Image 1 (cartoon, one colour):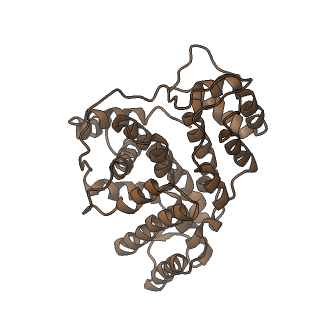
Image 2: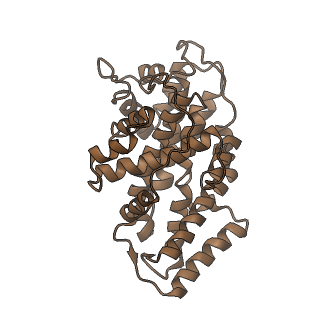
Image 3: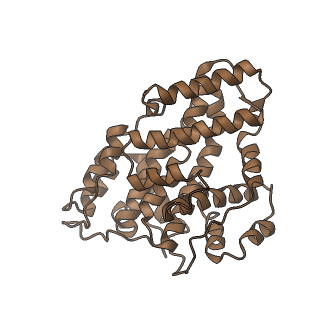
Amino acid sequence: MIEFFRRYFKKPSTRFAGAGGAIPPTQDHGLALGAIAIPISEWLLSPDLDTQYDAWLLGHQVGVASPYVEKTILAALERLRQSGLDASQLVPRVPTILLNVLKSLRDKNVSAADLAQEISKDVVLVGELLHEVNGAYYSPAQRINSIDSAIHLLGLNGLRMLIARAAFRPIIQHQTGKLAKELAPRVWEHAEKNALACRLLAQQRQIDVFHAFLAGLLNNVGLIVAFRLVDQTGITETLPVSASFQKAFFAHANALSTEIGEQWGFPASVLHAMTEKYDLRNTGSPLTHCLRQADQLAKLRILTNSGLMSETDSKALLEAHSGLLQCFERLNQRQE
């Protein structure tokens, strides 16, 4: 896993060329929200949003627990972080096919035909690719069924993000313990919306779109690891309900996300944003702002879709921020 991401984040070539024809390196069709002048402000919703979201996320997977259970779980999280153990070993390995595709992406002479041949070896990746280009963002006049045509439409950046999402999906979704298995679909729902919101806000603000997308995906990895650790303790099948416990638990999970990103060799800008995200005393980098606000927009969209907030009320919270409102509306276009 570590080697996978180290290879992944090596700076790719700036073009594709070869027998299959040129592939534009930075196409990102269908996602531009226009050249909107948005001040990098500290827009954040009420802390009540986080409370509502946490209640939705955990659902019925909470219960009253003894102080012993709470202390045991928090101590295990602390040991995991302090021991120097590789926390990423708690998540599934990335399929070999993704390594081969990413290796191909670094080759400046790779052609569309070369990439199509590599991608065609993995039926799941083919499905992801065709689903992406035939979705609402690209809205082709006719359905695309050719891998070559799909690669031409996506371009380098779109392909990189698709592969990143394909790599992260099993990391978050494929769980076996009771708590992690029950909560993984909800964690993944937020991860996808968070990454997409980061991507859209980064485009508006003309900062690195791919790094923003990665930050959005990385944000929830530590939470899944924390849920898995609770399962592995064997002392409870639910998360203790007390507010003090959950505050400490989520703080550990957030820190784990950053630490796992370091172990995987994520870009420094992504790690910096992850570190700054929860330090609201620090104004932070533009990417930090994207990550903070994307997290809030993703939570707001989930609560709205779940019927816990009305669409009208949610949009009213954003009416003074046209770019954020547009981003919020776009988060409803991906329905996996």
